[in-house]
Amino acid sequence: MIRKAFVMSVNEGMEAEYARRHQPIWPELERVLREHGVRTYSIFLHPGTRQLFGVAEVESEEKWAAIAETDVCRRWWASMRALMPTNADDSPVSEVLEEVFRMD
Image (cartoon, rainbow, N blue to C red; front, top):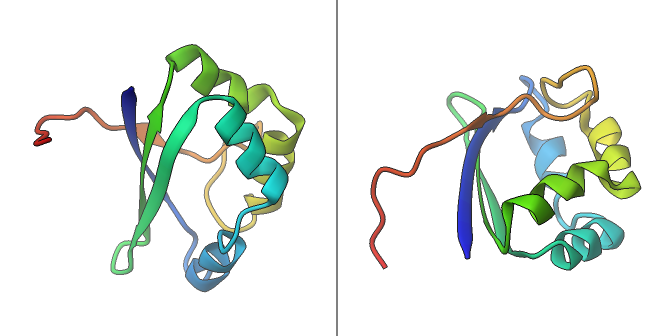
């Protein structure tokens, strides 16, 4: 299992709406995530900075990358673009984090 971690952010004043849209996420998006080998996925909000910290356990890098090519992922990104900084393709602006410590 591969553990992925990344940082994104939510626009000021959109924190509650961001959380609401994740409770729950669209069933078809959850299905795509699971079909692409995502075993666990959590997003945490730092309220002072509006930073979002995501961590996911995935089966493979290839399956994880393929999620971005699905229609449901593209629609999800488009639906979230007003809430957070996004790239030209509507994907969230994010930075991959390097794991420097782990205790199992």
